[in-house]
Amino acid sequence: MSARRTKFYLDKRNGKMMGVCAGIADYTGIDVTWVRVGVVLLTLLGGFPWTLIAYGVAGAVAGDLPREFADTDPEEAKFWQGVRAKPGRSIRDVRSRFRDIDRRLADVETHVTSHNSRLAREIDALR
Image (cartoon, rainbow, N blue to C red; front, side, top):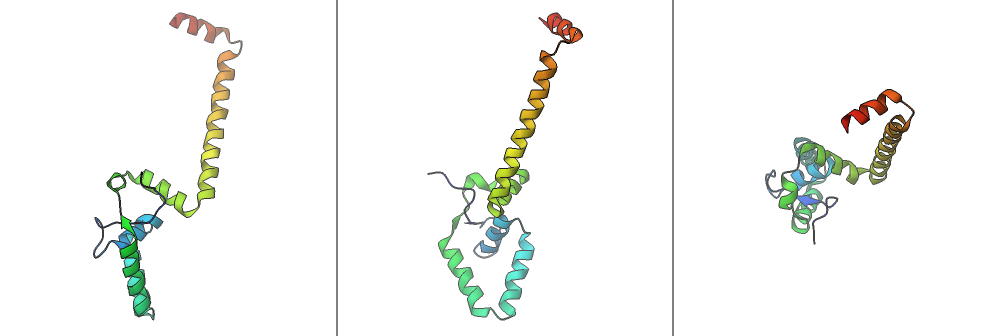
């Protein structure tokens, strides 16, 4: 079974302890430093036992980041972070891109099939 890109994984390669904060950063697209600062502040400002328990549970339950996802380019990683955050928006973006490509192809087809004698001569010259 192949790994899913929309699932939360521990990022032990970029992690300090168990890779939970690095995994959260990879999942959400937030810088890992800010995630770590947020966890420390949350722990110090009153969530002491619960943040440590949640950190331990996340470290025990979540799986490691698969090798095939470890070396993805930044553009692809950003795309999948957007999919995880707002899947409906991602679908709309893909549909919009396809509509734009379809419109541009229709424009090219219209231009090629129009009665443009100069273009017809250039095409015949290429044959």
